[in-house]
Length: 270
Image (cartoon, rainbow, N blue to C red; front, side):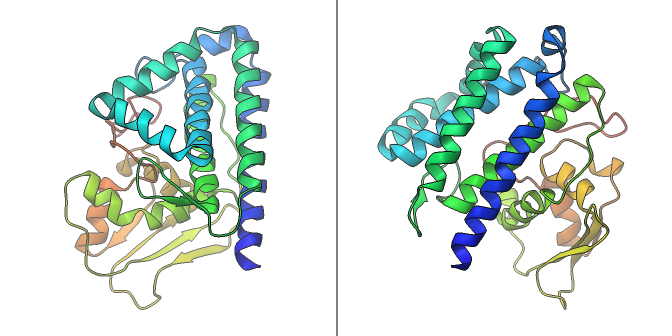
């Protein structure tokens, strides 16, 4: 019952996150879709096209794991260009067509995830995922690319409690973050204490851990999706391994990318 409740909760938040971003871009006007975002070479249209493309990939992983494996295997030698090609193809569509495609794709993925039986697991670009984990990953990516869109449009979005999912996946991906940067994972757990948008405290890890990370949840999430440099955020570490984590943390699967340079939050690639 608890697992089912967790799935329903994250699915509700996934839908809300997508709806919020759709409202932002849907009311921006056609010209705004051609604005450059902080990701090098990507416009607002590229960002939405990428979300539509990855939603399709996630749907393939859930419905046809063998087909997913074939597609990922084909792209293994050129992952970056494969992602770029997917975004570029969608970005050439008229904004209203692209918006409809993204809306339909994420709706179908949402319905498909909601229909999955308890205990289901699906392949992905990193470790296999449960239904809740897949929904969380889609929420995280929607929020992260929404930050790129907001930067391009000059909008400051109000953080919500949905950031809890982003923070949680970032904490759970700690060892993966070290591995993708070709560094050994620490042997001990960290304590992570984050101030939520409503002022409450979100905690992860043992209370008595010697090494810890603290700060605003928004800042930690921006760091974990590599949308801001750690020097521009109020996230602090106690302990050498925790400090090293702040330089490699990422909540998403795949290569880390270039990240953002310090001192210029709205510039650089992600």
